[in-house]
Length: 317
Picture 1 (cartoon, rainbow, N blue to C red):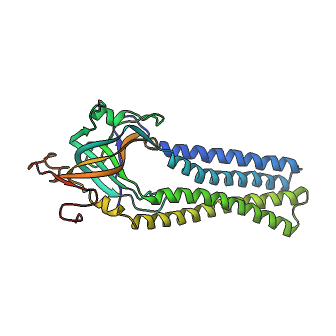
Picture 2: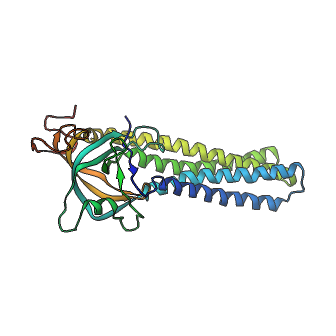
């Protein structure tokens, strides 16, 4: 099952989060690469084959820093992307233009249940007393959250408010990957140093440069392997946590083509530069009448209040 994407209908950078992670990648490469260059300078390079080894040391060190920067930067960006608004909780009604689960392997997929609520019937139901309008809900940035721009549902091209029910997979995978990458880098440094000692390379001249190269490569390999393993372990723990809860039942209770009322935490998602409800705390089913392509409004006025994760007759078929 695929999740629901959004598309800015004007300004906005949907890849702002990716750009921040790339900043960490570049910073990590610069810092560790510089450390490698300084280590080479201490050894001294006379030219010839030694110069090629020295270049290899700097490149391997920069690569190790880039890998560490990616895993650490992704974790930082992941947990620092959502900024809570005031009021922190809102209630919105509209047509569920899209409903789906962003299934796949993290960090490429976070496994959240995602929805686009919108269409002509999109309205603000509460809370009262805050001067909330559709424009405010969709474009007012939370303090510290950066800009927020309007989005549309890509399939219908109707105005939308993105809504999510968060999975534990993304959280645990981000932590596991960052911790694993750091641990792997440390282990790689130890292994690389042991190789140097075993081969008697930690002496001077080209031997010392070869030692530095071995350590830099070992750190890079360890950082990548540790990050990948930690990511997988974290994702597995998150999957177990989701399976042990009513996570999927809650997501399956919200169906595309239905008029619904959703309540949840109102946030600015700085990684995509839009506002959204994340997480949805409750849902009310008004009517399922193919509101995406049909009337866009309730024809019978049926109001069926349900707790999220449950339909009046049981689990959503």
